[in-house]
Length: 195
Image (cartoon, rainbow, N blue to C red; front, side, top):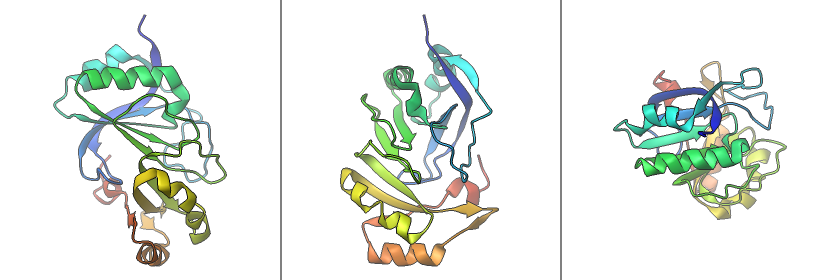
């Protein structure tokens, strides 16, 4: 029997952040999260999503000529074996599958790309991946993330956006000038006003 997974939404857009910024991609946003961040741009606590089978997801995403797929949330890794099955099924359709996670669970299967975006006061256990993306809440917070950097090839700081305004830009510029391995990632989709 095909396992069901709770999906908040699936849509085609561009990757707006990090290494793949500007790349056309399918987004599969899964419901549920193990954290409750006050700055979350996708609060899922009161939205259980729609239960979908992997076959239903493949019927839409699998046949598309867009090969880049981003599975995000919420926190996708809370779905464990179901997530692993979804990733494998998409890869069987020739898709490049990226997981965006807060890093509080280990990813034991093999997506094509792992982006870890740690959240304050959370215990990061996923200590390696392709991309580390840290919200620039303040300088002390970002400085506290340096110990994670060794396990990642690409390092990004991202300004917090509130009501269309990106915060802490002078501090971010100072940080990347002092730490040239890090790059600035802005939310391109918000600038372009696309989903």
